[in-house]
Image (cartoon, rainbow, N blue to C red):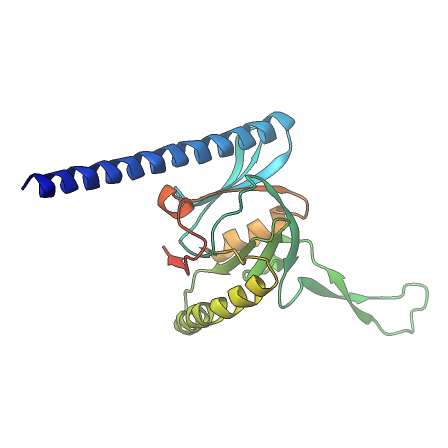
Length: 225
């Protein structure tokens, strides 16, 4: 009986120590992110805060939120980088936002107008589905919330393809000694357009995940919230 009681006490002690270690790790990570955001706010530089603890994105400057976007749901693959701050390296989209314009040659009235494509700058021309790559290797993919019935079907097929393809991508990146980390966000179509328009290359980005997600090992396959 004493042996059993001794084992139970040892197990409870080990569990309490593990919980204490997790709390300390959470506090340390929170402190690192707060310090990083404080440094960005003090610099006056525009930056994006992806806060999955409250499911929202904020475009901020000097610590003040200039724009807030609500995240409907998200999926993740891998784990966040140890670097608290990264910058947007590039944005990729299947169709680049362009607008066809009829150009008329005013010097030669008899010449027909020519259609030319120019880089779109208006908000209504921005895409609703795209990917953004950070300098630290993290990929942030954005999709608009499905509304019509065919959009729900497409969203379901994309979710299946996402879970089937990510193990292959992770394995390929593992062979290249480059862990694959992705955060997939679902926003309204208008918010997705605004994020693409406002988040430009070179802008700093901070990602704050829930504590239980931040502490998971890199072998985690995925999470859908």
